[in-house]
Each structure stands twice: as C-alpha cells, then as structure tokens.
Image 1: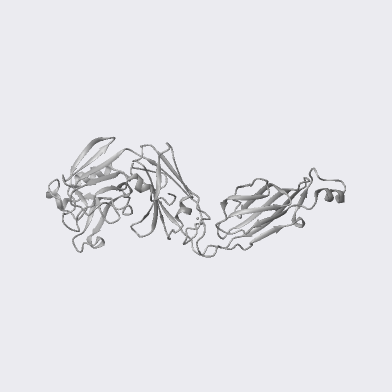
Image 2: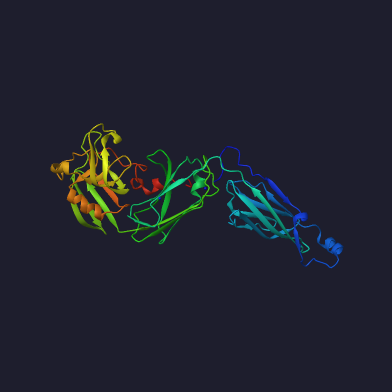
Amino acid sequence: MPPIRTSRPALAAVALAVSLTACTAQAASGPGSSADPAKGAAQDGPPAKVTVVDPAAGKPVTVTAAGGTFSSVTVTDADGGRLDGRPAAGGERWTSARKAVPGASYTVVAVTRTPGGKETTTRSTFTTEAADRVNKLTLAPGKNTTVGVGQPLSIVFDRPVTRKADVERQLKVTTSNGTEGSWGWVTDYSGRDRVDWRPREYWKPGTKVTLEADLNGTDSGDGWFVRDYRTGFTIGAAQVVKVDLDAKRLSLVKDGRTVRTIPVSGGTPGGDKRSWRGTAVLMAKEGTIRMNSETVGLGDAYDKMVDYSMRLTWSGMYAHAAPWNAGNFGVANRSSGCIGMSTEDAKSFYASVHVGDPFEIRGGDTKGVVAEGNGYGAWNLSWADWKAKSALG
C-alpha cells in the first residue's frame, strides 16, 4: 500500500548456451526400440540434441531440439516455480511464456522423440546474472479497501521508467463489470514516474477491481523488477463533493441527490493563497495534524494543529476545520488555500466522506487546475487526452 532490457548490454547468463547430449540422457523405450541394441540404434539414429538458447534475464527461455521433437519441456526455478510455455509448430522449439528473472537458477527437463520414436530425457541448469539495480513500486489504493468513485489505481516507481511500454504490457486490470479505462503516465508530485488507471467515467458503486502486475523479469530501463504484484479493491457509495468557491459553499451529493450543504471559506484571492480548481480526489483522512505554512512556501503565515484534515493534493490543499476563520464561512474566501469550515461541520463531514470521493471545485480566482500528479488530477483531462498518455497508444 520485476524486467526487459535497456540500451546497456543485456544481462548475460552464467550459462549462455547449454547443449545436452545423449551421454547425460535417460533413454526410454518407444516404437523404435529393439531387443537388439545395435539394430535399434540403426533404426532410431542418435537422440535429439537439446540446446537452451542464450538464457538471460529479461528474455523468455528458449529450448531447441535438433534431430527430434519435444514431447514435453519443464523449466523450474530453485523454489519450484514453473515457467510455462509451449512448442512452436513442428515441435522442434519451445519458448516460455514469461521471461527469466535476474539472479535465478533454472532447471530444464526436456523429453524428446526421434523420428523413429525413441524418447530421451535430458536435464540441465543455468543461472542468470543478478540485477545491478532493482526497481520497486508503491500501489494505491491499499489492498482489500473500499474507496470512492473517483479513486484511480495508481503505481509510483522508485526508479525512472524509460521502457514504459514494456512495463505497461505487464499490467492487467480486471473489473467485475467490464469497466472501460486506460493507463496514463504522469510525473508524480515527488518527481518520480507514475502510471494511473482511471475509468472513462466515475466508477459504478460496487465494482470490484483487481491488478495483476506480472513484472518479475521486466527491465524498467533503470532497474529490474524482481517480483510480481497483486492488489484489489472495491468501489463504495456514489458520492461527489461539489465546492463553489464563488458562493462559498460545499455540497455533498450522494446518488445524485444533495444531502448536505456547508458554508466554507476558500483560498484568499489575488495571490499565492488561492485554492486550486478542477477535480481533486480525497487522498487521505489524516485527522488532527500540524500545518506549517513554511512547508508550502507561504513563509510564517501559520503553524497550528488542525482537526478533521482531509488531504486533496500533495501540494497541501485540504478541507478541514478552521474555527479561527469563523466569520468568513459563507461570506468571504480568506484561507491560505484550503477549504475551511466550522469544527462541528467538519466533524460530521469527515465522518461522511471516503478516500476516493471526488471534490469538484469551481471558482473564478484560483491558482489553476489540479495537475495529474498533484494528488489524483486525472479527471481534469478529457478521455481522449487521458488515453493519449498510455505508452501503448
């Protein structure tokens, strides 16, 4: 709450090519067998020559059989995990469906059959070179959580991702109702690479979402992934928060019906204390926290403990209790950029909203629109513009 390859030389395997010969094979009787060994050898010929072709991390395992065809191929790692695959037409070449991963040892057991029907079992091992750099990621929302209809599936990477298409191909999103959506690459507020999956429209309540990130063995361009990731979450109630900074009020809309209206005071017009506009998604309910204006570039404007704090952007815009600004609720925007309300209203509103609820903020004098990476601002792009951010076109 993983790999492919960069322009640098490919990771070499400890064993680049493994040729397996009859001297290491166990022969099995077949249609071409004979009580006379010399006669059987004449009919069957030599066993197939099995070769593991240039095994290396970030590449599928490829095995060939010269002079025969595969009856079966089994590739397992040191923990007993299997790399499944299938033979090509003709049965003389087998390729794993997944890539070999860095720093792993594999055992290849191949059963081949000659044209005369003689079966031979061959066995070999190889080890791929360990990764010099490892990339990791952080997933949001948390596993098995229930979130609002605006919550995207978001992945932030520890290291730069220059092979975005290769990484995106390994990310599979499944929904319980066939929701249409798309990945989009953005720069997170932290400066790191991030990819979000958002639906075309707000989620339908009750939708179950799962992510299978089969990244183990994928090269991000500046580091290898050395594990797979799984997560899943559920969409909760259809709630939208509408904030009108010009009218100085906030409305909670549930299932299309306004159930609560609260007088508020937004950011002070005309300078750096203005609020953001557009759609921001409730990122976290942080409770009572210390807010210090120096952390958001506003000098010594404030330094205080604030109750019922609800984070809307990474840059520091919250909705929260602001009893010191009581005279301005519903009257004037006089905050330092946040959306303030009375302690009583903040307490009940805090209990009603959920992480992932979208806040649709409008107003004539703001800093601008919430950016995609400043929290979850993907909803401020048209569907066509969002899809264009996918590395797969």
